[in-house]
Structure formats: structure tokens, C-alpha cells
Length: 243
Image (cartoon, rainbow, N blue to C red):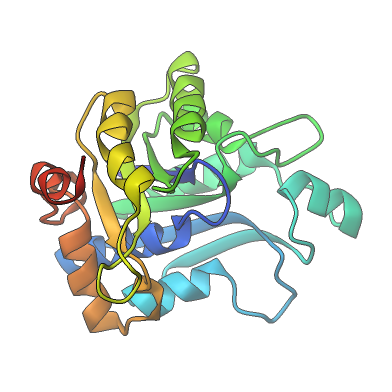
């Protein structure tokens, strides 16, 4: 796949870290990888945004941000409040398609969840994925409440004919430093795989965003499955942690 959309079941679920992990593995394979953030919200001009995090962790420099709004809102609401024109996802689709012509992979990280609005007409990352014919990698939170959010996301994708690239847990707690996963997290593993009708595509360790680039590459390789260039073994992970 030359274009991969990365969306989430909501905000603050680890989309940027997963994007960086996929980018790091793709860069290590070679062939060229570009990372696109159509709209960055909640960041003022001159401040580091999600693409800077990706660059720091993955070492990727082929970065593309098309709009930035200072308020931490949906792109549509942030554009309305700031007076800055809303982003055209049709133009983004054209630009991403052009980028994919000479890159092995183009990653597109959405804002918030799959159906967050980018303009007053209601354009979403789901529309972008459908226009590009690109699969979506869904980043989920392992905590209590994730099953409903994930089910709604996957159902919305299915209704729109959008292919699922997999479900990745954006932050899995370490048993030595974070107290380990609670009962709900451990129970959710099997149910998330049932919802997706496939094994998990990965689980990145909590705190991965604080690693340096070489350590992050190792974490990315261990935390993402073979389809994404890593060595993550979903069956072993479930046997270790699931209930």
C-alpha cells in the first residue's frame, strides 16, 4: 500500500506515536516515506506540532502540513473561530496522490477520530480515505470504553467501503513502571480482535514518545505487526496479557 491513513477512536489515543512508528519502520526499509498532517489544531505558528514529533522519533524529513489553527478544536471549529479558511480535503487528496507517485509510502494522520469535521460541509478523514482508496489504520485506547468507540469507528468504515489496515493499541502500560494493564484492558484484547475480525496489528508501549530515535525504532519494530514492518506477535501478546 502506498498510502495509509492513520485515524483513531478519538483524541489522545496515540495516533502521532503510531504514525511515527510506522514511518520509522518504513524509513528503515528505504524507498521514501512522506508524512502528511492535513490540519494541525491547538498549536500556534512557530510551535512544534505532531509532524515535529514524528520527525524527532522517526527521523523523517518529508513532512507536509496544509493548515494550522491555534485552538484545540476540530479543524472545522478551529477554522471558524480563527477566521482562517477551512482546509479543502479535495485538494489534500490531490496532493497526497501526487506525493505517492514517487514515495514508497505516504502516511496521513488525521485529527481526532474518523468523523471529525474539517469544514462546514462536514468533510472528514473518512471521505479522504474513500477518495484516495486508501486503507485506514485505527489507533485505539486499550482502556474501559474503547469497545464502543472502536465498534462505531469500524462500523462507519464498513458502511463507507473503507478498508481496515488493522487496529493498533496506541499506548500499552508497562508492568514495572506504569503498574501494568488493568482488568478492563486485559479483557478488551480479545473483544477488540473480535470487533476487527482479525488479530491486533500492534501495541506500542506507554511512554514510547519519550524515547530517542534508535530506541524508538526498536520499540516500533517490537510493537507493530509484520504487515507494518515489525515483529509484533498478536497471539503471544494476547496469551501474555489477555483474560
